[in-house]
Image 1 (cartoon, rainbow, N blue to C red):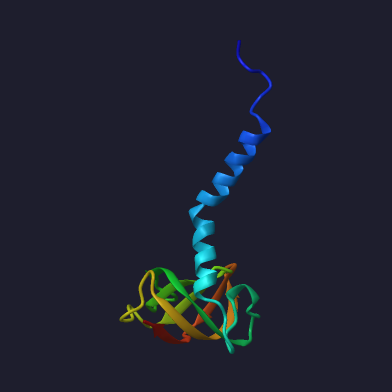
Image 2 (cartoon, helix red, strand yellow):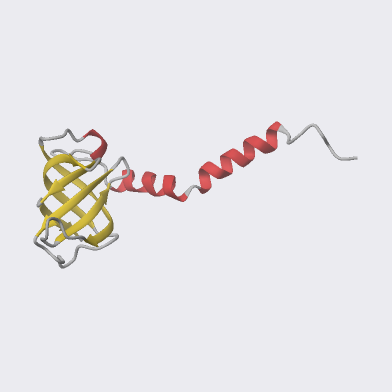
Length: 128
């Protein structure tokens, strides 16, 4: 006769724990937070205030060439484990060394455009 009582609470708790542990996106964010622990003069992306000069450190998730107003624009998503900010270099088709997985510092002002946090033409430094 089948068990109609449903799954045991122990099994359900185990399944939830395994799901949290196996969530690669969450693990990736934890790893980035450890790697990009803030030091003096740096701000984590989640705490970075809008319209103020900030210095951020993170890892590039994606790089896309997307024209803006007829001008080429190189866009990169910078992730530090606390949040993501879109970095846009207007008039650039590529920047040597900037690619997915690359760690870097950026300095500039964060604004909001089309519902995304964005920094236009920041100063940047590639981290080896």
